[in-house]
Every structure is written in C-alpha cells, then in structure tokens.
Length: 281
Image (tube, rainbow, N blue to C red; front, side, top):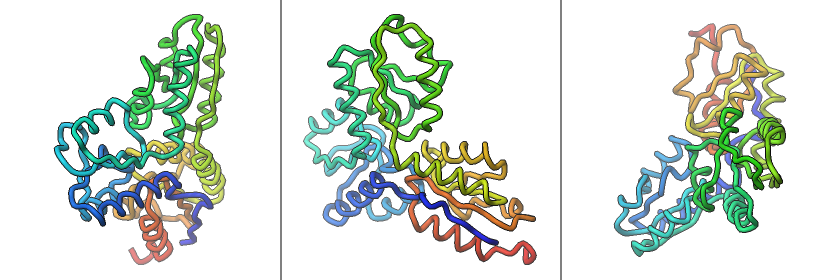
C-alpha cells in the first residue's frame, strides 16, 4: 500500500505545550489533577494517567494537590473556586484560546453583545462563555434566532472552526437586524493549514484516514472536510479501530491527524498501513 501523510498534521503548539507541562509536573509531584481531559485524545490521556495524572470533571472532586488547566481553558469562576480551595494551579491553556477569552471580555466592556460561533458544549466555548455575561453561542443558522434585534454584536469564533463556515455564518448574520457588527478573527492558523493540507491530499488518494479522538472538534472537522472531497474517508482513533475490509482494492492511502493526535499514533498507523497486503488476508 502506498501511503502519503499530510504535510501538516498532528500536535499543534498548544497541545504540545499542554502535554509538556503535564509531563513536567508529573515528574515533580505526586498529587496531580487535570480539570477535564488535558487534550481530546483518549490514548494520550491514558498514557498520562499511567504516569499519575487524574482527570476530573468537577471542582468538588479535588481536595488537595496541583490542578492542570487543560489546553481548552476553563472559565474564570471555575479557576476562582480552585483558588479558594487553596489548590496549586498550573495553566496549560492554549495561548490562542486565552486570546479569545480576553477578546470576549474586552468586547463586553466596549458595549457589544458577545457572540461566539462554535459548538455550545465544547470546553473551549464553555470557557469563553464564562469570560463575559450572557454570551450567545451560534453553532449554525438554526441558532440565528438567538441574536437580539438592533444590537451591537461583537463576534468571535471557536479557534478550530472552518473558515468557510465562519464566512457563511457572518453572511447570514449580516442579513439580519443589527446596529453594528464587530468581528475579530480568532481562527487558529495551524488548524486552517491542517484543513488545507488534508483537502489537498485526499484528492490524490484512493482512501483517506483522519486520525484523532472522536470527541476532538478539530479532528471531526478534518474528517467532514475530507468526506466532502473523498467519500472513502474514515475517522479513526488508532490502528486497532481499522476495519481492514475497507482497504480491499485500494492502492493508495492518505493519512492526516487532528491537532491532539500524538506522533506515535500516526507513525504506528502509517507503518502498519504500508506493510498491509490484502492478498495475505
């Protein structure tokens, strides 16, 4: 099997930093918690758990020790609760996510109604929502009814959203009723590069694989993008999830991966795929 790997894929700077911070703290301390999965990759989280990292979903679950704020960030109220308990806090929030949080707060101070284009239940979006009062989350056009009439709208976007989706949503909002609309581009350039690289590669191969956590927003977006171009696209977390029957009759394969997918997952998948011979199955 001929295998090609997307030029841009795998860990981004924010995720690589979060993992590095976690490994450093775990080497120094025994009682370490992550407030939510530090990144959206099951295999990476399990590997850190073996080193002692305990993942929790509620502040009440932590009574002592050190708390890592994951790459997606946390709302100010949640961080305040952790501080009130006297816990040591190590912030591994992606700097781009920090920027969105800061912008949301500044837009509110300037008198804008803050709007974020993104997924309401994604931890990055939840953290941004906690940085201003009554933030409106718009996932798609079905949410446009949430926008107040004749308001000053201050708009940001979940960092890993697709630029085309952002453009469509801004166009739809522009046809509505508003007195002013201020848009700050908060998209991650690394996420965009991964999307462009994946779209280019999947046009050149018989079958395309997108590796990464099923709960990872940027990985899902890569898979959705590739499926529009190549219907033989599969979103998998690792090699063990591959149904070998999909390889039948395929001569070339493309591989890309989300920003939270470790290199060792990618390398293992590519190595096994290159060695695969359906005649021996």
